[in-house]
Amino acid sequence: MTRSAHASGIGGGPLLEAVSDVVGRPISKEGCSFAGKTDTANVRALLAANAVEVDGPEARADVEHRVFQTLPQIMAAGVAEGRFKYEELPGVRALLAELNSRPDVVQGLLTGNLEACCPVKLGAAGLDYSVFTLGAFGSDSADRNTLLPVAVAKYESLIGEAISPDRIVVIGDTPADVECATTHGARCLAVASGAYDRAALEATNATFCVNDLSDVQTVLGLLFDQGQYE
Image (tube, rainbow, N blue to C red):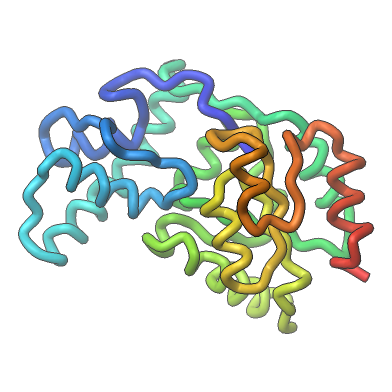
């Protein structure tokens, strides 16, 4: 949905700055891939990759809690200072607007980012966070595959009715997004605008795959003309 256009600072990004700040020394991302993962999982990977000793689950939870407290502040300050910049990917704004205009659609944000970071990141890219009725976030769970049930539970509590998996479409740009959807019987529109090319995404169980979202009518055709919302 957004792309990091530039991230300077310790190691190259707000999460690295937050972890470095909490543990009291520079942290490297070497050997770690953040694509498709939750911030909780990424913090744990950084701690392990940088041999940060954490004495037991309670101590690790305390480190994570402190990182999560400081991360939104670091991101917001970095955006204000021009150190962190995020840009809208092609077609995202128009697609969100179109979906928001349809009474038969409830838009949710399912992301590995912390909930408190989402308004900052989307706002920096010029996207309206308020179009999302509900969300499931990296602050809800370290395991991305558990986030879709979180979103479904929020939907059913808010709307007051159950929703079948075949009426859910996850839009994402990593194999982890595809797995998050298909594990629970939902559909997935894979978008090759991130770290994975189209061939890699087509090798997954994605229901549909596109290069990007710039052709909004084609995307809407996939979403609405393939029987999901009949």
